[in-house]
Length: 431
Image 1: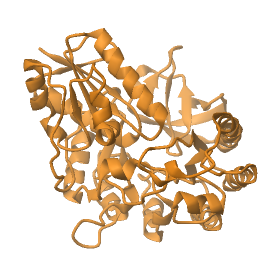
Image 2: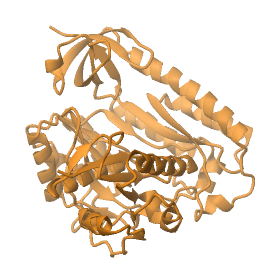
Image 3: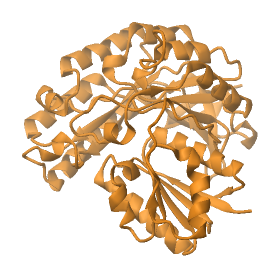
């Protein structure tokens, strides 16, 4: 039997799509093996949000060729979509296919096996949502359910709208069928993912919204949890919050990108809100759901960002009291407006601002998780630790480690929280 290895960079959407590609290759007779092992085909699913992700993609391409000089090397994803010509100059690459027509990959690989193709898969106009059933691997705990793709935000720093194209939503009946299939396989939690998740339904007939889809998914008995992966602050509606309040299955956790706490920077980023509106939203959410976990993305070193403007971001982050922060440094992306802005920030300044924001994020994360010490929470156990314990996540996206039998992996159990760990909590399975 032929085998294939996969490597994923970037977001949860990419993780979902890699799982779908594994399923496609499985149906074509391939066995999935770890990326470090010798394989007949290597598929690198790329990200292009920063120049670091581009570089990492190139490193993995070369690593795959070193592992098996005779393999077919396939590059797909966002970097492949926006920089196909550049990737084809990498001698190790056989086939480039971006963010479309990937249902043809096994067929194209067969063609590549007959002779080194060294080509870009032809463009086909995307017609609606690209539905590819996912074959989720690993412990059967959380499954990523892709329900939307494409973006029309056009933030000035972001290449994603150019890589992913226009909005496409997965029809609710199709999404529900896929969720039911994954639940039957034993997955307890569905993570709803999309490039611009809050726009779900805008391209479908009728007046559908993300909240309507969630109301359909909560009726699937074997699904224990539904998690919203990321949503823009301008798309959080009273109806969506009503869903969180009405259905215990929906995690009290929202990931809401802030990007900057300074109004001038937000305008130059082409974000659709100001700092006062964002803070008002956070306070309204906490008034509705006091225990809600709010995580975020923050960018440092956007062109022209002054020391004072960065201090505004630090102040804003403190006021919001996020439970977790993903910090990333601005990286110029060719083809985006911000790449042409004056006053590009030096790497040294970006590094220092990143360090300060990460330290603040760790402080806020510790403050948030410590509120659960002495409480009993539900944990979905996902994996084993090196010392024989098991670990998993609460609905608030807090990691908990406990001494418990391996048989509990994949189960949701009540856990008494005993103490704080460096990046999570220590607990004991409740009797």
